[in-house]
Image (tube, rainbow, N blue to C red; front, side, top):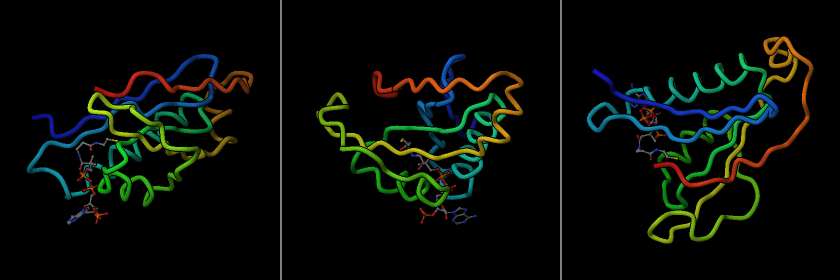
Length: 123
Ligand SMILES: CC(C)(COP(=O)(O)OP(=O)(O)OC[C@H]1O[C@@H](n2cnc3c(N)ncnc32)[C@H](O)[C@@H]1OP(=O)(O)O)[C@@H](O)C(=O)NCCC(=O)NCCS
């Protein structure tokens, strides 16, 4: 049974990963799965040589914001207006990973390109 999922996007030439979506099945929430998934995102991004994870979250999604903040994400930039289909804004969060570990894990030259993942909102 699938109780949750997280989708992370990474690009070869960017050290910034994007947490595209994360969700835990109703009835399974508030039991630590969101924490586990979010930490796994950091682990996977680090293993692929990323130095930062970014995400966008609906401005009124206080539960998700609490989770992200608890795990070291901080909001940055101005809210993105009209980000979701119903016109709601998004707040952007980011978390720095351990660049020393990330670069080693990538086994390649560090690429400082700074691609902005501000694309379509998660489904
Ligand atoms: C946001 C979301 C992924 C969090 O997942 P979750 O599995 O409920 O997260 P966790 O259980 O790890 O943590 C949530 C809360 O449960 C608490 N918790 C964790 N383990 C617990 C346990 N064993 N017993 C009681 N509470 C617990 C955490 O401390 C946290 O408390 P807080 O909300 O007061 O900060 C989930 O609410 C969800 O799927 N929401 C809908 C989709 C969504 O909004 N996604 C985010 C888009 S940006």
